Image (cartoon, rainbow, N blue to C red; front, side):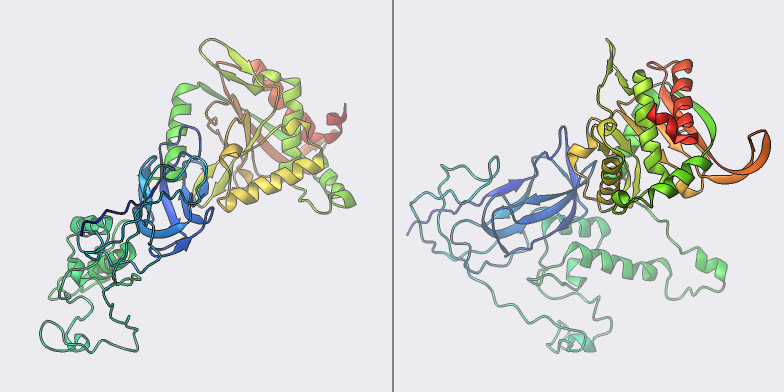
Length: 465
């Protein structure tokens, strides 16, 4: 009897932001064999700007995950394959070549199925699907450390009785996905030697990496060559290599482009912020501000917005034909995260009240630290502030965020002798730095902008004028 093949839908990595060309697979939220619904989160990806959760474009059964966690994938590359109609039946385990075994007979179904799909994703409504049934080879029960496998190995005795049972090769082919097989080949590892932990008895990428790490010392130091001194022992240490990917890769490229495109000039100013700190202490007592965090960074944000109003050229961007001045201050906040430096921005910050600005600043910083910054929050910034003082640094020469004309660095606040009211007194002093694009701003404009920020931080009442 003739049979008709069942088509399987593939979910391709979409462009979740303008111009995205690739992303890293951060973590999978589903596994092979899972039944998923429309909009259920399938995977978390790391783009050049943020962590993004991708929802399922359709309901169905996961037939295959086509990329490994940590892998860099190009936009448009299939990352998930859904089983065809009838996939709720037990699926067969993958063979050594990565394909699935199927029963000789498959029941053909003539009606068209569209499934529940999201707009812009999924299979065409004109695609025909055929029902198929798959057989499952019985899998041996997974062993635990307290229940060693007592079945005879290739040498005719139990695995746990053989020396080096963990590294001894198993009989028959090992189950693994193509990316894992390629990595094993690159590392020179026989997959049959790697203890599997996959749900179907397959070797995962982590299994392979763990096995490779365990066997490293044995390869580096021969059994007959025992270290005789601490100096010899230290020679076996390996270098730590951190992949340049995701946010770090994008930041590196952006900073190089900015540094070699915009001619940077940096100016500095020491400011007595004693009165500002006293003003912030008074604000903390106000009931309307009880739910927000009152910090010097908040006051800097307000001061920068006020200074931009007096120096509009600072809020411009340079093109070959013209300088474009934005009417909105989309204030970028440089945030150091575990994934690297990112700069989300607060839209129309100049229109916000102090309470609104405090709420936006706190929310933006929290999302950045959690890796939940949205692509929209990373776009269209006009200028940036960065707090280098939180790391105990007095000042610096920050590099412009690409496309912006200025960045303000806020140094640490230190208590030093300072002239105040014709006397020397201990005052709270910080150092401000402004790096600017010299194609847009000349020395005078940079100096006036920085001087206005300094005035506002020295005496916050000037912002009421």
